[in-house]
Amino acid sequence: MPLGKLAPAAIVLAAFTVCATGVRAQGKIKTEYRFWLSLKGPELVFRVALDKDNVPKSVSMYRPGEAAPFQTMQNCAYSSVEWFPADRYPDLELLRTADFNFDGYQDLMLVGYANSPHLGNTFYCVWLWEPQEGKFKVLPGAGDISDPTPDPETKTIRSHRDYIGGPEVDEVYAWEKGALVLVERRRREYSSAVEGCGEYVVETRKNGAMVKVRDDIVEPGVDEIVPCKSAKKLP
Image (cartoon, rainbow, N blue to C red):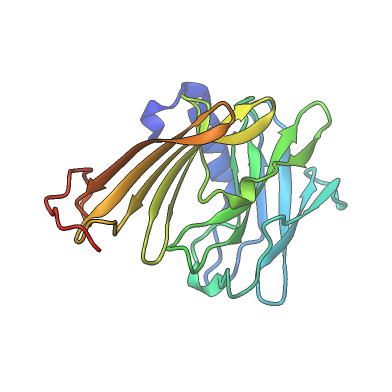
């Protein structure tokens, strides 16, 4: 979301976060971060531990000036060099923050994998900050969501993923009874039962289950959702 559309307080917090990340040394993987979790704090230091292939395996949290971490968490989306070849993503930040449950506190995202069969999609282990307890708690299921992006206006988490050979999938997740659940899926297929055409399917959550509400035969390879001109059905 452009900064121009953010509330003034969010702009200040975004500035704190950007400034805190520092500058990556050329040719070196950045493993230490410093973030403010809200405008009132706390400010914390984070150190990412890598395995022998430079895949993130855990993250430790420190209070500024303290030598010992007060919490260490294993990467719930931990993968391997085949799924996350670090040298292929030199500019990818291993650690990020975003407010996933819209409580005014930044939550933590540690990259798990970002490789085939997904086209540039990134998957993260996500932890929610618990201000009363002063520690992070893992968000179950978040590691299966591609590039999760919180939308503060709708209080939802949006996701987009591409697959080699299709489909393209857009998903929306919402909070229900303290859990993050899928409430909408839009899938764009490059082929269909009609020769030379694609398929566009929309599903929404009703009574606890995903229900198909739209299934159109569309023109493949175009951005717009338009009816396919071909009428020749495959046998």
